[in-house]
Amino acid sequence: MWIFLFVSFLEMVSGADWCYQSQVSCNSSCSGPDEWGVIFPQCGGRSQSPVNIVTGNVVADQRLTPLHLVGYQGAFQGNLSNNGHTAQMDLPAGMQIKGGNLPGTYKALQLHFHWGGDGGPGSEHTIDGERYPMEMHLVHIKEQYSSLSRAVSEPAGVAVLGFFFQESNSANKKFDALIKALRRIPRPSNKTTVRGISLQMFLPAPADMSRYFRYDGSLTTPDCAQAVVWTLFEKAVPLSRQQLSAFSQLAFSSGRPMVNTFRPVQPRNGRRVSRSGGPAAASPGPALGLLLLPLLLLLH
Ligand SMILES: *[C@@H]1O[C@H](CO)[C@@H](O)[C@H](O)[C@H]1NC(C)=O
Ligand SMILES: *[C@@H]1O[C@H](CO)[C@@H](O)[C@H](O)[C@H]1NC(C)=O
Ligand SMILES: *[C@@H]1O[C@H](CO)[C@@H](O)[C@H](O)[C@H]1NC(C)=O
Ligand SMILES: [Zn+2]
Image 1 (cartoon, rainbow, N blue to C red):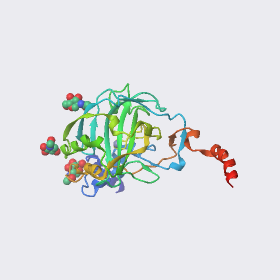
Image 2 (cartoon, rainbow, N blue to C red):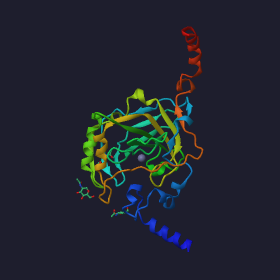
Image 3 (tube, helix red, strand yellow):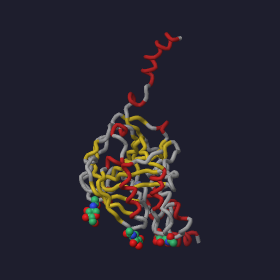
Image 4 (cartoon, rainbow, N blue to C red):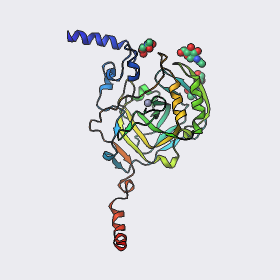
């Protein structure tokens, strides 16, 4: 009986597409995050993403020096599409990352976003339980591979840079072209071209990019391959409420607003989360206290 039920459940879900939790309530024929692991076994693995980062438990690592971003300043035109799950921009060749203790040189493939509803909580990773309104993923693969599906054959074949967004009072003009283009891709499979942009425009100032978290995890959408070196930058990118809300104008295939496009956080299962900056850079620590002690005694 139970086996029969399980088999019919498998038959039911294997014919369906995966979807986010926000889509399950109005469409029982798609598989939400709780069922991903049934159809895509890696989604049930022990090194899944996203995770909640507990800043009190991260370990400072002085090998996590600033990343070298190659070709990030160059202007390009990117194809932006609504792929039914997110807004994704495919990137031309010529953008790479290395350094920061990454095990190789990685080339950029695409960027995409995860967001909430009308600027509400929507990031995938959370910091001490806080969910930011949006998270951008810059997906890179090791330079010798020709596609994401080949790169995931190696445990560190993929490197994703994650950027959080926070609400600001004024609009971030650097996002104008991309956000305007969202109007041209309301429905899945709509595509448009965005011109005159560079990756650097979408990132925090270079001086703000030396602080980041690092851990080993997975893709956050099926098949959830456990092949990703994650780098999550502490400094959030500002966008106005109106700019954040613009992402919610997109629609899923059902025609309903594309909102809450994030996977729930996954168990860390003993994985280490590191943070850039050696012990000396992490905090003033006892050395500074010792220097200040005579001064305090004098004042007393
Ligand atoms: C964008 O699409 C055009 C037409 O399909 C294609 O020729 C071009 O290579 C694409 N550019 C990128 C960066 O994917
Ligand atoms: C967007 O895609 C829908 C089908 O999903 C199509 O009917 C519509 O014409 C497309 N719109 C544009 C602007 O390409
Ligand atoms: C339900 O989800 C399936 C799979 O994602 C999709 O093909 C179908 O169009 C959806 N139907 C509705 C009414 O949303
Ligand atoms: Zn993502």
